[in-house]
Length: 295
Image (tube, rainbow, N blue to C red):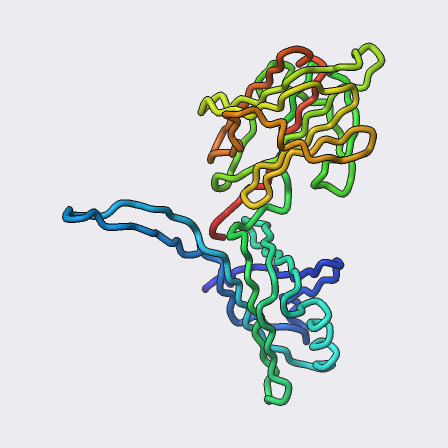
């Protein structure tokens, strides 16, 4: 007996409105999903003058195109069609959640087309979504921490809606974080303690080293008590932001020459925290979501 594959597909717009495309009882029937596999790559080469072969100019992965083919049956077809219209609008942002027995991921994109047959015996439709970022990302995040301060405390991480408890830290200068997906960028949060025993200039020129590759990312200058620096190294969203007294400012100009936008390779990654002075006054959090080219 062939076992049918379980999956769930949910579409969500920028306002948080959702529609479950896998609610089958008198609702939606998905017949096909395209765009789950890795997108194609583009390889650009040039030939040598008067020589065999060619040389590589560049290589990159194309955008993802998710195409959902579906049908509707039962009662209230018009009502359900308008529910889809409310969530899925051409040129507007949409988040695609895809879940099976072994994976729970999402991709972000924009609706290219939404076509539906209104007067056929079986109402059918197709939604095409263009995802400039070709990766699927795990819905759950992975964290690793460093601090010489061992007490538990809370703070809201930028990519989470709710505070999460901290207190299990690496108290050596090393942070180990596991990446179970493809190579990806990640988020680094450097927080200067606001404890009354900490001097006003809590630290100076913090550096995050990749112990596996020798690459580093260094922020030049003073880190004041209570400062928070958030660094994102994800392709298409590379930022360095200082939060001081509740005000955000772009400090990408404080990146030291030679710094690398660090990434997480597949498997275990080890990072090393240093500073010219005051490293013991810093709490460092690494966060990423496993990224997959195909699911």
